[in-house]
Image 1: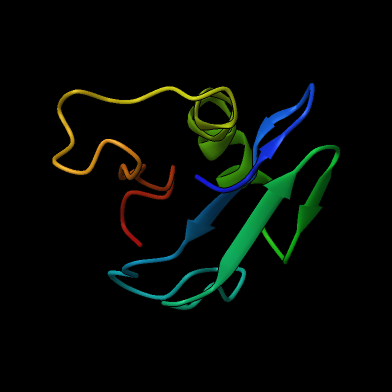
Image 2: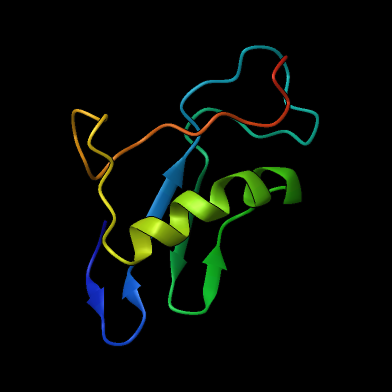
Length: 83
């Protein structure tokens, strides 16, 4: 999580950590998006954004997941389970 933004929660970053096969839209390991206030910075396909959005929104408001060793970091799988 990042800096507290008054009225909008935290800035969050999502990073591609692994691609099993070949991403059909070309995402690569290391690609990042940043959500802050009212914008999404970086390139992301609509499927990945739809999958990530609940988790990103939770982090924007300070959520922590007790099952993650680092409670500020979690893993969200892509809907394309083959890749």
